Image (cartoon, rainbow, N blue to C red; front, side, top):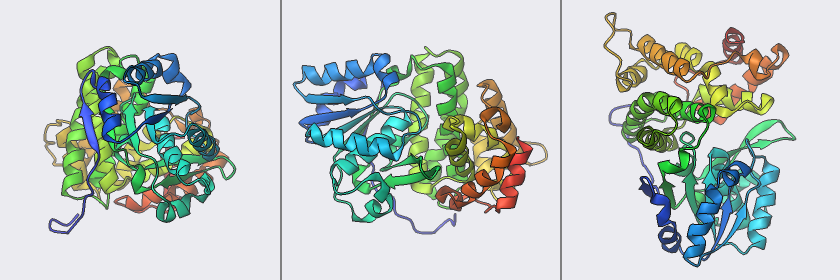
Amino acid sequence: MGEYEPFVVEPAGRTLFGPGSIQQLPDVVAHLGGGSVFIVTDPGVVGAGIAERVARILGAAGIRHTVHAEIGPNPSTVSLDTGAKAAADAHADLVLALGGGSSLDAAKGIALLAANRSKTAADADELWTEAERGLPVIAVPTTSGTGAETNGFGVFEDTAACKKVYLGHDSVLPGAAVLDPELTLGLPARVTASTGLDALVHGIESLASRGANAISVAYAAHAVALVGSWLPKAYQKGEDLEARAHLMLGAHLAGRALTISGLGLVHGIGHALTAHTGTPHGVALAAVLEEVMEFSAETAAPAYEQAARSLRVSPPANGDWPTAAIDAVREISGAIEIKRPLHELGATRELLPRIAADAVADAVTKNAPRQPTEAEVLDLLESVY
């Protein structure tokens, strides 16, 4: 990142943050002109009573709504087409994304396809440039990690091709994000760890990305500080509202950063590993995080110094900031008990070359500070097998 290189940052939507902010949903819907709301969520959010709570708030304000709770982990392109048809049948004019990253991503895809009924998710490449505007979107995350409320795209599973596809459009960037940490209080520790680790990686990769600029670095540095400090506390004591609030805000800032800068090789490998094994996203990232940082250490030294400083690492006597950052990240991963070898995640040795190839081909890897070859990624995967 050159100090004086020009850049452009597009404005984001409204952000409402704080305990109880979910109560402001009717005003947010009115602000975006919604009369019929299509709520996209998952069975877990329904089971936790959160979807009912949101429906009750909308109903009390006289807002017509439909709940679509058919989104699973790692949503597929088929689920987008199904959801878009349901939204069109409900005559929805606004989509409310409620849940973790899978629901938020799916909601954006559904909002786009519902307004472009001649298209399907298979037309992802065309939709980026040729789509009509999607339905307005409100994002209400119930996890702290993905930052999906900060951008207008999603990553989906093409089950036929066994790969990830990117689908999105500027028009489905959420017009508002409602960040209520109370909605995360019941989150299981393992989900807190997985989603929180995702947020930490977003911050670190945004600092090191080839697309970084002064604004993304500002977001990312504060995100790493918040997530690094509060993720272990939220993991250890899930009912700590202060920890939940700081973690949610950190994850949001990390999302703001990555939307500007792009990500890198950790996510390239993570996407491929999840596509081939079904491993939860954050767990897949944790499997290779420190190793990718070591691979990139020389090229990304200034970014890793910033990460170490955000993680409140004492200045190393030998001046080796990248190693200090990697050690700090390793300590956080240990505190939240998330790192696993690949063989425990369902990856076979025969599968590793395919994962390496897919990781190098993934669009996010182009932002990595050190560009890897397939052979280098394969070596890295072997080291954590």
